[in-house]
Image (tube, rainbow, N blue to C red; front, side, top):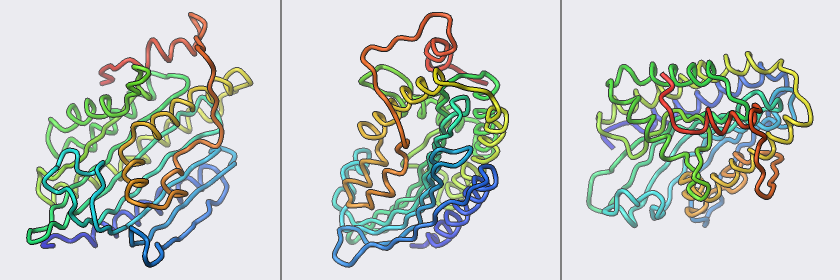
Amino acid sequence: MGDDPKAVGDYLRGLQQRIMAAVEAADGKACVRDSWEKAPGEPLQGSGLTCILEQGELFERAGCGFSQVRGPKLPPSATQHRPELAGAPFEAMGVSLVFHPRNPYVPTVHMNVRMLAALPAGGAPVCWFGGGMDLTPYYGFEEDAVHFHRTCRDALAPFGEDKYPRFKTWCDEYFFLKHRNEQRGVGGVFFDDFAELGFGRSFAMLRSVGDAFLPAYLPIVERRRGMAWGERERAFQLYRRGRYVEFNLVWDRGTHFGLQSGGRTESILLSMPPQASWAYRREPEPGTPEAALYSDFLPRREWL
């Protein structure tokens, strides 16, 4: 390729292992490591490793997957911004995680870093990067949102002052439930189809974002994991988890890419919470912490 996708794969595998080792240490329970390989004749070829911890003391479900796959034709979700590459063979690799804590005061978190290479016939390979991280609290705390955003900003600072504001806005626009006119959480950063710094610097930016995940999230976990909670907080957590399910199945491009390209369904859907609920026209009582989530935390705002 002229650039080295093997280095990207090596970094992503190492990142997955570092993150899951930290999760196991925080929870006290070992995760299941499930290696997989696509069978001959399937639409996609490749392999991966799904790591998942379920029913732990801290995390009700914490899944982190690595995959590296090749396919004969880019799916529509990957070419909506690059129509000239429609139908090209491709290689994709990435790490994606979603952690659903047990305590409703600990926020759910998502992170993804990935590279996609299109291999058009008769042309040079076209590589681009994507990823980011975002925080979805059930009960909002200003200091948590500020810490998360500050860590994201600092990770992007070496690559240009424009990156955090751009990617913060992109995150707000992407993690938005259009059918409810509602943000999924307090945001973070998100970027896609990114190659403007060249392969080397774009890859370095991807590494900086990936390496920032644990410093962004674990201090929040440690602040909140000991807070007492009961049936009321649990019911609200399950209700808000329903929004998470709605976004991932209706709007998320990564989920659509995996399902449209013939990916491994069990791994693609590791982002689903173990339990969620829905209620008809549920409205929180004014003045409650639940109402504050809607009034003070979900509306888009500048956290820094």
